[in-house]
Length: 91
Image (tube, rainbow, N blue to C red; front, side):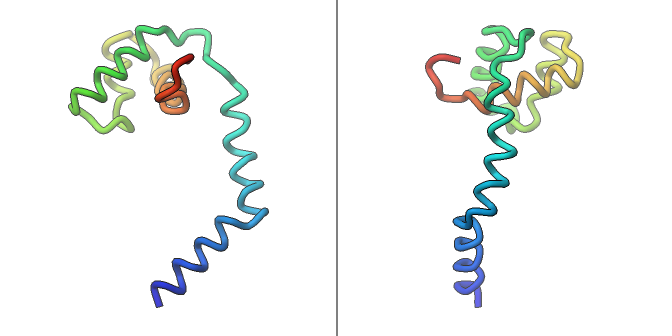
């Protein structure tokens, strides 16, 4: 039974409809580029926080707020940008 479900999920993920929905969600975020208030210092802080293992990176927002005095929204935007560009040389 589980194999059938796995096959169905795999087929669904490969469907043009799902691919279109994913593209509609991901593309606008990628087109936004780097928010004006995101500094290299924010990204380096998040790299260091990740390496420390202190928190799961989905919980990094409050660390950004405390360290840099960002609003919750700003911290979320910084974190989302960091996640989208993680591993890229030119971010």
